[in-house]
Amino acid sequence: MNLLYGLVYLIGAPILGGIIIGLDRKITARMQSRVGPPVLQPFYDVLKLFEKENIVVTRSQNFFVFAYLLLMALTGIMFFSGGDLLLVIFAMTLAEVFLVLGAYSANSPYSFLGAERELIQMMAFEPMILLSAAGMYLATGSFFVSSIAAATTPLILLLPGIFLGLLYVLTIKLRKSPFDLSATQHAHQELVQGVTTEFSGSTLGGIEIARWYETVLILGFVYLFFGFNPLVAVTAIILTYLLQLFVDNTYPRFKWALALKSSWTVALVLGMINILVLWLYFKGGL
Amino acid sequence: MAFLRKSPWIIHYDGSSCNGCDIEVIACLTPMYDVERFGMINTGNPKHSDVLLITGSINEQNVEVVKNIYSQMPEPKVVVAIGICATSGGVFRECYNVMGGVDKVLPVDVYVPGCAARPESIIDGVMKALSILEKKKGEMKEMKRNKVKK
Image (cartoon, rainbow over all chains, first blue to last red):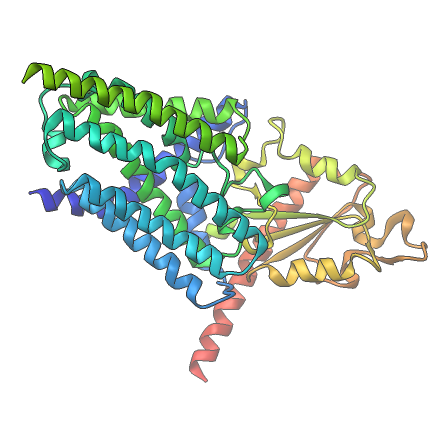
């Protein structure tokens, strides 16, 4: 049964992720009083990329991107089939590392800069996501996604600080402004396209598909906080994404130092206080 | 399938333009014209692009740059010359350093004349270039097939 969810993710996540990104572009356009591209635009883009010539600088870069795509899909399968949350987090980090290696191997100053910024972003994201895993363990007594999602107590009430902290760093993972430091359509002058600069054709298409997998996986994390009621959870996911879009359209890009400092501050203050309170509460209760 | 037509990614290069045509190209991105509704994105990266927009004439200094950008774009690709300077050199064609229009160095597919070219005609020119892009893709496939046969 659980593995079935994993298979559904493997096939369904690229479709769902593509539609989410398509709606994202449409809503963003409406926020800027533009018409915007069709909702299926991300699929057109990727299918076009597979029709194009693939210019390769070094052979290894294709291998690294393939590993990135494979690991990102595998991470999602582990998550949605109810696997260990810690393993999911580290496998996701490993996937990102492969993307960074791919960008480094291309030997271009722009992809090098993008790769360095990607590493900084990972550093900014990790503490908060690990703290949220720790918080979920404290609240439910398990690291397994299947038992966390099946918890009858609303986790959001036990982990409000951690949820807020996670909302803050989700912007990094969804590659939204103000944290779109490493790869973005909007920073031509400073880093061309960052991590993805040296990739073209089907390889770039692979990166895009991995991004769809990643988006669905990240939104799956939000689900865990509302596991007690799927309807509330889906509403929360939609509201979370709309909030991210709103922030994306209202904030300019931060410098890397500010991105790192602010996300660590949020993780330490909100995450740590939440975990401390929870620990004292359970200690007093037991 | 015609996915190339639905998602043309653009790189814009300013040759020795007076900036008039560049401002019109940028105007295409504004809410008034919004080319993203055709799936067009200004990528600023030759390796991601399908369409090369060049404004302004080619001179002795930028000829290498233009050739470099063109050679980095993956096949199939098209070149659109925006404005009369990119088409023929315009009023600058007699200058000692100007070589002439873009077609002196690159195979231009669509010419969009005008001083400055209007956003409507730029969009029209790019849309015309897309059918040429489709044709080039067909030729590319044909060549690949012939290669396999041999």
